[in-house]
Image (tube, rainbow over all chains, first blue to last red; front, side, top):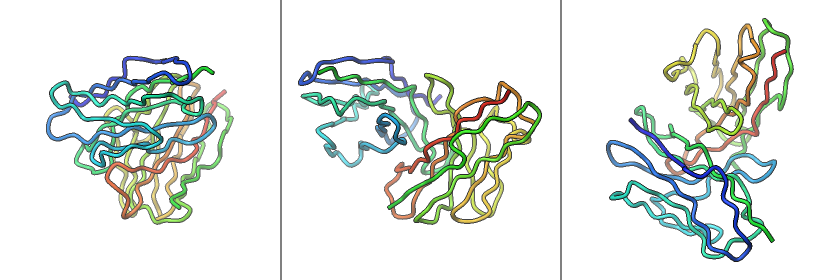
Length: 111
Length: 117
């Protein structure tokens, strides 16, 4: 079965500390992995996707097929990074943009 | 660009009534929109895929007669919760894929909170 697991509901760090938001997945085939972010009182938006191999706002994520993981990392957290982060997996059900979302991790960056 | 808007943002209704939620793509045409339901502190649960000009595709376990989806134009999809009951109270979110955007790049609405009394 296709599944996305984010084991941490809440991750609290101090400003300047490294951040790693964990995401593990289960998928038969070649998955595409994404990280979406929701800042306070804003809508959900795409942060980055594994296929682009990009760094957005200092965040990176590497797809590790051996460990079936797609952890989101940032070396030095900023207060403005505080948000809800969702890992997502697709495609499934034969539709390109159908995604499965994890339960989300709330990142709280303390001053 | 790529703005998706939902209306209403919140709605309170009496048990047994029907409620319609609209999802509009404001600056692009969306042949496909998705409807999700989110329970407190839980993930987004995909309810259905809304296809312009054809019937919606519902996920397993979602009652199609309960949650009516209509995608009458390239910029509008509606979700109607029929004969709503308190257990239908939830946060409903829509998203749309924009032509030319990357795979998996979805544009989300701000969500609609439904409270059924």
